[in-house]
Structures are given as structure tokens and as C-alpha cells.
Amino acid sequence: MRRCRLLIYLSLLLAFPFMVSAQEVLQWRGADRNGTYPGTNLLTSWPEAGPDLLWEFDGLGNGYGSPVITSKNIFINGEIDTVNYLFALDLSGKFLWKARIGKEWMQNYPGDRSTPTIAGDLIYVTAGWGTVACIEMKTGKTIWSVDMIKDLHGRINRFGLSESVLADGDKVFCMPGGADTNVVALDRFSGKILWTCKGLSQIPAYCSPQLVKLPQRDILVTFSKSALLGIDTKDGKLLWSHKQDGEGDVHINTPWFENGFLYYITGDGNGSVKLKLNDDGTEITEVWRNQGCDNTMGGFIKINDYLYTASYGRRYWYSEETNTGKITDSLKFDKGVTVTADGMLYLYNEKGQVGLVKPGGAKMDLVSSFKITKGSKAHYAHPVINNGILYVRHGKSLLAYDIRKKL
Image: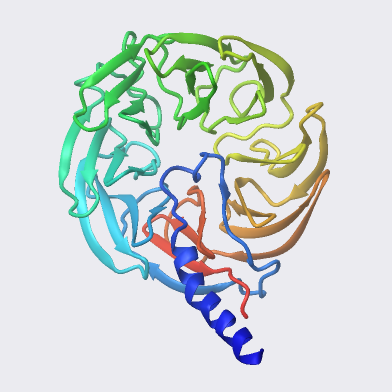
């Protein structure tokens, strides 16, 4: 009997690395673009100095984009000498290759501002001055490249084009922001235009879009300068829009769709909003809004009946009840990014502090925190969690922390 148990235990140990390696992060904020990462057996508290730092790669150049991670490699963008490059690393942080993408944004907050998207064996990346490129994953070879400004008649905005493009089926979607070519679907294998959508003819608002899949149709949901747009992915038809009351144009956070409802949070408009999407996706109805719960670019998390997010203006984190929009708790931890894994919230604020929070429905409990001391410039990048590793990009550096419980 003891020998049988030992054999079972050994077989589980041998199987565990295989099961773990099957996890991948292939696009902005994870599988559903909502900052929720798979994982179990993660630490529920950290030492005072933080979890163990496994490695640092400090050759990325400038940037604020996050990594994507396959079973073998890490891909991330960075700016060196005004040029955006896609970097390939192995899982130990060793440099493999870099591919030149295009001209990067240098006027304010210089550096890369988007996350690669992986579909099959191809990687789709954008640069701040409008290049969208398709890169072969194994070699770094450019398959095709499109200039959203020159080729798609797009328009630049105040802080550079920042969209992490979305791929689905044979299409890749991007937002040049042109008067007639506002949102565009490209053939993801050739870069040829499949359809264009006029939208509301507004400039882009830095949002990485969400894909809502319904029985009747699939809908691309994204922001232009002063409105949330819902676009049929089949033909580019604008189905509906939801205008912002504010005068700002910085609507960065990807919306969240769940059980027939859309949620979004913006610091330059209506604050936090809940919309009801009808069954066929052709109409929306506003359920509530709370302008006191604002977040410009840190994303938000929904767990059961609560949203968790930072407030940009007040520098607090909030929990917000999804049935009413009422704020139920606040946590003083400056402002920044929120992601989640294994039932915990991971906060990364603009002062470089990383916090581990236990969400308790209406309440939040800050369990542990530590400060990022490596890297450069602003702390804007969204952390990624994969296979028990917390990846934090701070400017030129990508840091990998071990957040797994020890046996």
C-alpha cells in the first residue's frame, strides 16, 4: 500500500510541471482581457521584502506594455533610440531575439505603450506612431506591416496610439481613428482590409478592445474619444454607442462583459457604469453610473457582486457593489493597476508598491506589500501572473517573482 501511494505521488509530481506549462498568457490582461489569471497554490502573504525575485531582464528600453507568455517564451515590446522592438526571451529571462516594429512615441511618456497579441504561431504588435505588424513567433520575421496613419488614414492622439490589438478567427482589429476608417478589421494572415467602420469619426482613446460573443453575433467593444462603441465583427456595422459626459479623451480600461451586462470605468467621462446588453447585442440600456468611482488606466476586477478598482482622482482603491453602483469600502494605497489570481487581488501603484489584498465582498484587506526598486521611469505597466510567477515590467526591466507556496 505504501509503495502504491509513493508511485501515485511520484506520478503527480511528474505530471505537475506539464499541467503548469499548459498555462499561457496570449494577450492583454489575460484570456478574457479582464486581468483574471489562472493559478492555484499561490502565496496568501509575502515576506516584508516581498516574494523571491527569480530574475531580471534589464535590456528592454523604455515602455509601459506588459509581457505575453507561451509555454516556452516571453514576448514584450520596448523602445530603443525612438524605435519599437518586439523582444523574445526564454522563461528564465534569457534574451533570444528582437524584431524592429516601427517608430515609437517620444513626445510625452516616451516608450512602448501596448502588449503583443498571439494567435497561433503569429504575434501582432503595435507601435506608438501607428505601425501594426505581424511577426513570426519562432524567428521574429515580419510577415506583414501596416501603417495606420499612412495606409489606413488614421489620426494620432495626445499620447500616442496605445491599443493592444485583438485577434479573432481570421481577423485582427485595430483603431486608426480615421474619419471613415475609424475601426478596421484586417486579414490577420495578409494585413489586407476586410472591413472599415466609420464609428462616430472620433480619434482613438487608447482602449484595448473587448470581444463579446453572443449566439446571434460577436461584438467588438471599444472606446473612441468620447464614446463607447459596439461594432458587429462580421461586417463592421456600428450597433450602438454610449457617450461620455466628460471632456477628456483618455478612456483606457478594457470593458468587462458578464451575464448580459457590460461594465466600464473611466476617469475622463462617466466614471463607473453598468449597461444592459439586449439578447441580440443591438441595444444597450444604462443601469447605473457612479462618477465618484473613476479610474483612468489601471483596469478593474469583478468578483461575484463587486468591482475592485483604483480611483484616479482620490488615490484610493474602492470596492463597488454591482447591483447598485454603491461604493462599499476604500483602501488607501495611492492609485494604479488591479489584477487577480487564486482569490487574491494584486495591486501595483504609481509609487512602485505592489500590494496583496484579500477581497471580502464589500470589504478589502491589505495583507502584504513591497516596493519595486529596479527598473526606470513611471510605474504604469499591468502585472501578469502565469504558472506561479508574478511578472512586473518597470520601464527597461522585466522582473519575475516567485509567488508559489512552497511544499
